[in-house]
Length: 61
Image 1: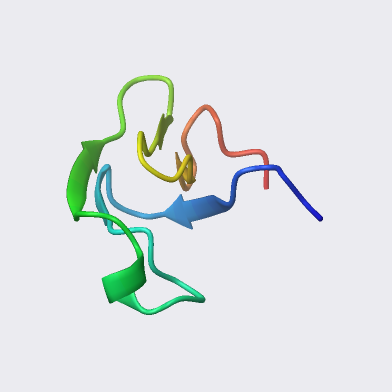
Image 2: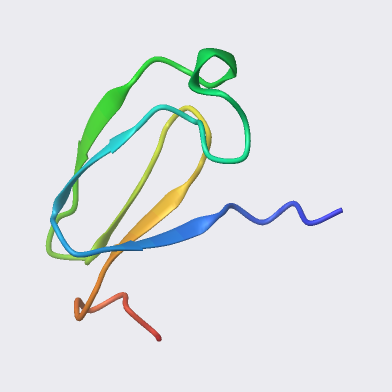
């Protein structure tokens, strides 16, 4: 089983996370809005998803 947080590359510095994805939104967590700062990424405090700004300093792809 992979215990690493899911990394999601995004094009906007403001992202919403509700913990859904492969599961229905009702089974996720409350929707939170996150802001990517000068580091180029932000982590969700509920589900640990790692959001990386495309072209930002943390974008390794």
